[in-house]
Length: 540
Image (cartoon, rainbow, N blue to C red):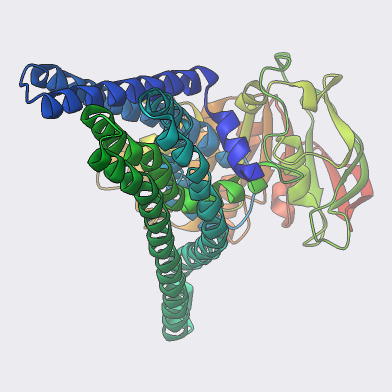
């Protein structure tokens, strides 16, 4: 068993594993009872055992349904935990992450709901049946015990090849999903530059590679089924032929012979089914390996631990001590031994050329990037020791490109505080200078926006983001170039809204344009990941 499979099994609740093992053993017992009743009815030409036989079959069906229900619910809980971890995982290719979160984790279902229960059945049922075979005819039981190990050996030999092919198939699907999502997101730009035809060819080629990889994986899976069927058929023949000859010679009772012939295939059946379940779960295992790689990535998002200390109330003092952040594969550090003190209620603007580390600084303050060295103190407490959810609940965030959902305007603003009433939503919109255009929309605050805020200008989208941050009401505000790409009028309205938003709060603003500096009392300039200048300006 590979390391990723062992790690997946550790995610399965222990009580569920124990329960599935007990159910598998019970199925083995009912299987033996069913065979006994069938042999008695046939050998003795007696219909008396038939009602009990029907009950045994019904019992096995109920146990199989229970196994499916228990394993399915446990699989759903495990997937929910993995999705939560990935949603809080390190930033990466959005398209590939969407594929992993949807099709990828859904492919884990066959592992938990099929492979794990079948693995337990393959461990329990053959043992129970072998014990009964040994009691009925030790010679046949000996042959079965010798040939049974051949099934997992051949299955493992073919399974290694299947795992390699399925891993390549998942990799191609991962690449196809990521590329397709990126193409759809940038379709407007591609059309503007006449590159849609080229991307159609690329997507077609990727889809063709995935199709060919899928066919190769299915071919090996079918061949492995043939191999396992052949091994099991030959093993059963090694038992059936001597039993038939002994029955003809009168050396074996009819009831014992029939019982051996009925039970022998049942020893191999769980192992054959295990091979099929393994092939069905191979894609999910490959996806899980990718998910674990994301979760284990250095600098993963979600730095502050859940269940840590609660941050104190009010506008905090934030201190960075020798903070260094280096992204994987980057030649230089994004932040290089940065030390900075932001006083309670102080508004600091961060300037500098592109790539100087401004956005990384905001991500560190938000707890979304963990420093490689150094630390961030919030009112004297290490940010790494604060409760992540409690800290982020105190943050207001206005990104450079805020995302608006295909939902009413009010609901987009209400993301800052999902429980806010309509009065507070309107108050936030007015404070952000967004009310003037929202009230002119066809349905006002009930107007449903297009995905990404389609139909609104860049300035209007930014003002809704400011309204969202205003509604959140946190004592810490982080603004990442909110006035970028705005015209002068939109910039002026947004700066006025920012001044109202930041009043009495500890704030860090990333600014390229001088207008936003009006909202700050101090300017810090970054160059090459280091602080090049730190000066005070006249308060707004």
